[in-house]
Length: 143
Length: 148
Image 1: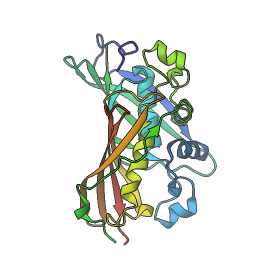
Image 2 (image 1 turned 135 degrees about the vertical axis):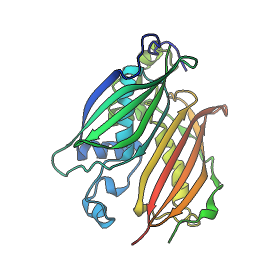
Image 3 (image 1 turned 90 degrees about the vertical axis):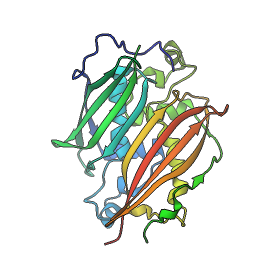
């Protein structure tokens, strides 16, 4: 770990929003993530396949949704400073063949640990008003 | 076919180490919209105290999912990959991953649960570097929907 780029612990307050973003997922986003991550499950690019296994159509990779959540936190925390990240994938995000899915991220301070000098960031991820990730939490090392 | 709860405790790997490259880090950072220059430029990364270009938080999944695939394709575990959805994920970083790392992965099956209509398989992938030092622990739970 490096200390050079960590956010200051002093002054942080539980409940404060540290970062927000609206991300736009299209089929292009999914194909790029498939290539970058190596996750080529066809439920993320083929409607016919997705429907054959009982899904309504192509859905976003859960790890794309979580990876973007991490990027939102990192924008505040600095790269390399998220020491723990967890979630439960509560709902899939359907991504249409044409058009896009708008996903809203809000990262808030959920808890502070003065001894460890860490902040727990709780990330609310919403699509069409519904919560997509459950208990999405990032622990950030602070200075 | 249901999953086999007797597979708990199995371990796979380490296989050939994964070489972390600047190009792959940049590609992954682009895919998850991680904007920092420290994912793209050696100078920017060094200015923030890293030896080389640093990976985004969830980059470890690139290495972990390759390792987890050994579990999915093991016929004695019995996962039908076409009926898998991702249920849970957790990353614990012991240090940031940077370009030039050679990462070895060993995946352990920590838990398998069978419930009505759905089974879950929980794996723990331990990533370590070329010196054998721990880099990250990736916990992943897959849910397998049984055929109706």
